[in-house]
Image (cartoon, rainbow, N blue to C red; front, side):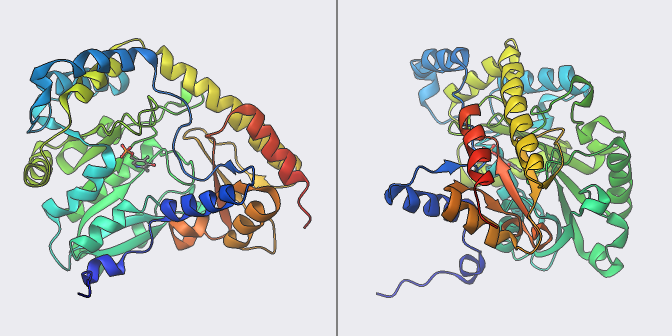
Length: 388
Ligand SMILES: *Cc1c(COP(=O)(O)O)cnc(C)c1O
């Protein structure tokens, strides 16, 4: 029998990071000593106290059943308390829903709010899942370019009126993957006003909110600003903050009617997050945050070495204030893909082509700071030997 995939599945581009992973594995099979700065997956282990908590929780038979619903009350309370401490934002427990990693919620929110033909406003370059969910629900993506001249913030004022009329949902992501940009207070205030005026749900993805480099430059939550809860929700993840990408745990919080819509979709798709994982996440959120401080220090050292190294070689790069990415302008006369190939072929370094995450990313490549300092130094050394 011939297996035929549906049109939506056929429309999806190959998932970028799976492609990059495939190329990396091929090179490793050829025996190359690859340095992977491609996929944004922390190389550091989950902190010990979180693992211990999981080990204890996993033995409890009460955790062996379907979790169901929006998450343990104790998890949602821990999230609300964390939010209050971190952002001074008050959340009720019905304004929080546990997610099987934030990607799960980001990919499913469309099912709650998008009808065929509705427009979804998507930043590009950006995380591919914003668009995937749009294609699956037969929504129409409208891409908002993130350009350096606008500090990599979308220009809301240039979106045409006929697009706005059909727009139902807008994604934003600061600290930004891939550009490493952060959003300003002024941007969020303007965004809330814009969303209210045009009746558009805001979905703010803050997976990197805790990966910042200056005490005075802590990334903001969009929910800190007046009126935000009327128009939107925020997606959080424990993946990057606590090196827990494999555990699959995050949450969405904010407007309770939007949360209810997402929860209804989830009730019909999955049966919740393994409770032992939720309990480990409570430990992560309520214990000392020293482990996060340590992670920030590690990324900062890596960031400084790579940025300094690239600058010394004449590359145009900004020192990011947050996220663990370096968004580097490619040397003159080359495209993003040409540089990615050159780095792989001549330096055995894997990185991400900017245009792979959206056409405005052309002319840039993204390095993820997910290898240790000796390997970062080795990368700079290898790049310095490339013949141009
Ligand atoms: C890593 C990442 C996520 C989600 O990670 P989960 O592991 O699914 O929680 C969400 N958004 C962006 C932009 C990311 O880079």
